[in-house]
Image (cartoon, rainbow, N blue to C red; front, side, top):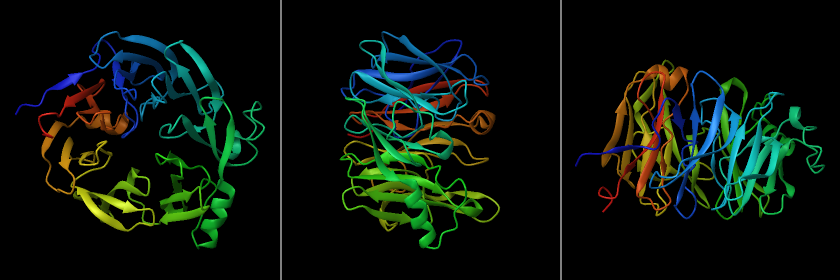
Length: 360
């Protein structure tokens, strides 16, 4: 069957979706959030919405952001979105914006945004440089992961990153001044655990999971990449092989990992940025590796060979220097895969493929 790529919005601008697995649809599947940039070489960025039938496009906000994940816009619930933006003081900030009232509900909050909200709660992290940047929240008193209740505006501390760093030192890991500057913070769906990428010395990294109920750490020292929660107790992530000179795309594998790094099952073949369908039976991943064609693959759970290649291109300048990554994500009903795709070395287009016929 022919595979049709559907462009979300076409014009004299680029469009960008957020992180892999950061579904751009509202929970009820009626609305899409995406970003427009007049030029990929500039930071001016607009937040736009449209209906999932691609009607009723409307601009709702303007921020400044880079190309990597854009403003990371996603839905909190059917009425609200969360997105990041730069600021005059060069600090990371984020907003909770109500798309029905067209008003900012919470923010700007200075902090490093997380992957997405769960149960109307949005986690974020604070580094040393950000400690005094939110005087409206006196609870922000140490380097830590915090939680914003998007319904009440209350901020609470989730876990101390000072304590986490000491835990890693006690385990024999070599930390640096950047170890407490964590990234890809994510709640599981029940908010009983949080996980994040943590940098170590010599460009090493560890994947830290923290059980919020039992107050226990879980570690994966040889960190697989672009991890997401698979379910509330395990991750989907990618094993990559580097021979000391280059990465080998053909050796990469999409796996399901326990929080302590055991491979529970293979999920797919070649991948880098990945996502899993809502019913957990389908996997998507891209082949974003240097000097390789960049493809978007669809896998049946557990199969190394893809069911389909949804897209293929070789715009390397766009992908590696302008830093727009494919970031495939499933729709809320699992029947679409959204991703970023270049049409030239200077222009990006957010689009999707309807995979209904492929997953029958």
